[in-house]
Each structure stands twice: as C-alpha cells, then as structure tokens.
Amino acid sequence: LILKLFSNSYRFFIVSLCIFSFSSFSIAKTDNSSVCEHNILDIEQQIDIPKGLLKAIGLTESGRYINKSKFVIWPWTINTNKKSLFFDTKKQMVKFLMHEIKNGNFDLDVGCMQINLKWHGKYFKKISDSVDPKINISYATSFLYKLKSDFKTWNEAIKRYHSSKPSKNIRYHKKVLANWSLVKKSNEKTMTVKNTLKSHIEKNQPNLLDSYKKIMFFR
Image 1 (cartoon, rainbow, N blue to C red):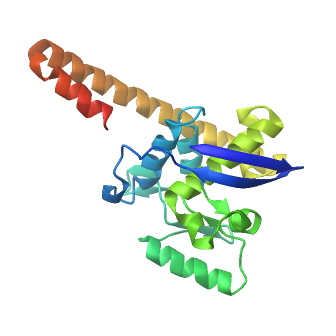
Image 2: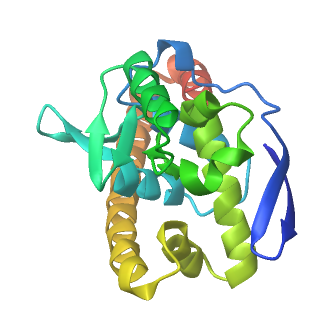
C-alpha cells in the first residue's frame, strides 16, 4: 500500500493510493460480515500501523451484531442524522446514497470506516468509490496517518478521527480502546488454537506439518 500525502495546513490530498500486492484473502468469496475485516488484515500486513487498531475503529464506527452474538464491521452502513442504517447489500446502500446526494445531503458517514462525505467526499474520484471496502479502509488509514503525523500520538489520532472537540472525542476514544482490547483478546485466542493444532500435528502427524504450514501461510 502506498499512500502519498501532501498537506496544506490541516487539509490534505491523496495523490495516489495503490494496492501493490493482491490480497491472500479471496474477497469475492467473502461474505458481508467479514469483508471489512479481511481488507483491514490485508492492509495491516502491508503498512506499519498498530495491529488491531483499524478493526477497533471499524467496530466502533459500523459494528453490528449478527445473529445476536457475533459483533462485526458491516460494510453497507450509512449514518445520517445520528442514526445508523444497515443495508443488506451494496446495491441497496448505493441506491440510498445516490438518492441522498441528489437531494443535497452530503452529511453522511459511509462504509466500513464511516467516512464523512461532507468533509472527505471530494477526495474520491466517484462518490460510489467511497463505499468500496478496500478504498474506504485505505482512505481511513491515510487519514489516520495524517492525524498521527500532525498530533504525534496514535491516541490523539484516534480521538481526532472522530472529532477535534474533546466533548465528543474523549468518549469515542474510550470506545475504540475497549474494542481494541476485545480484538487483542480474540487474536490471542486464535493464536492459542493455532499453536495447539500445530503441536498436535507435530506430535501425532509430522508428515502433515509442511502442508499445515502452507495452509496457514496462505490464510
């Protein structure tokens, strides 16, 4: 991922944002509940950013429960008038989005990372690009990097991703940190399961170890 940023005071322009490596995840085969996370993991592997931060922000911005138990980042989310709307498909979301734009409403937070079109819409070639998960997350990442550069710490970048006003961003920061903690715990459990499985294969089926390593590498 290459992010070329040029700043003019607080404003910035994305000159180019290119994804060099093809994701090891097959997004075309990914269901809606995991498309944001898969793109986030892909981007995290290519850049220097605290692991789990993008997912924590995504969960804070557009998180929803699936089957009343699984908390996921939902890609087809729009927030308008302080209300989150979760669409079943991208087509439904884009239809609503274009209707709102046609009626002059640009104050919309869209996609995995809830990019506000009133302030950031001009940085996309097409408005519809803003809801593409990879583009949406890539833009959010570039914005976070800009905030980190301007305000020196990731904590300050997290706050200002939401708002420059302490009355709004302190509570938001706490929510992100809470979700980040959940992400870290989930990652630790996943690693424990992987290590347990690897140990079992090494001990009982060593001839399958190379195949297992290849499978885990490409996941």
